[in-house]
Image (tube, rainbow, N blue to C red; front, side):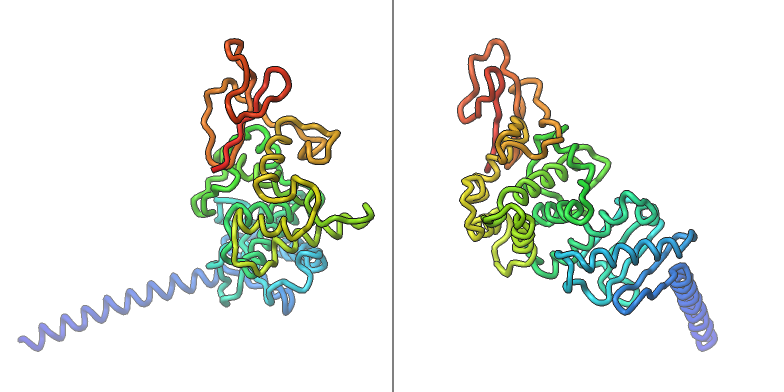
Length: 339
């Protein structure tokens, strides 16, 4: 009787285990079957999941982008081989994503993009270059701070396509975000206005550096090449420093005689003043000639996070700007917070 009970229990456990294994395997196989694999070349692999649309157009757009970027000075001879692109129809958090933990099913390094972003002719190359820069930057400088990573990736979009990400204008509309205190991507919510504005803020700063702080040159026709070298230094430097200390080091190494480019502190102050004043008669007096000025606060009673700035119109009852604020015209003040 005891043996019978033991046998029945054993059979029961075996059946449960078999069912669990079967369910697990069926689930695993269904996941694998939902992924379409396209080997474009020895250098590029495409994995499509959770989407049943036209894979030929997806493949064609990714291949075109890959070819363009492989010839660009930032990516030439530095792309990982192979590179995998995961196209995920269920990804909703952003148009694209990269993480050093992200891997394709064959364990190769990967970018993730949504089908809609790849099919959008106004977005796909910018997005591809942005996420690819994140991957490449991590290979050279895995210890770098998030705000420098994002600033360089956003600037890369412009360097590759000649067009700025739309967050640039958001940084002028809501100008009081911190330049350097970035959340991790997993914590970001791109539907929140403040976080879009912070991306615009850091894009503005890196474009300001790119435009002004490349090494000195004798002829204007050489300016672009020198500025490329400056960006490559930010991307590929072997320095163990990161964040503000690293940018200090890079700016010193450029030997640029423009006082704005002497160190991070001076570049940050000049940059924030230029966002509000916008004096197009001075090279360091504006961010973009075609952009708006940064918006003003309604009153002087606003708080600032570290490394940010705001400006306001003087109330009638206030005689002048507060201590450490920068007067702007007769009735405006710029407040800059660093530490």
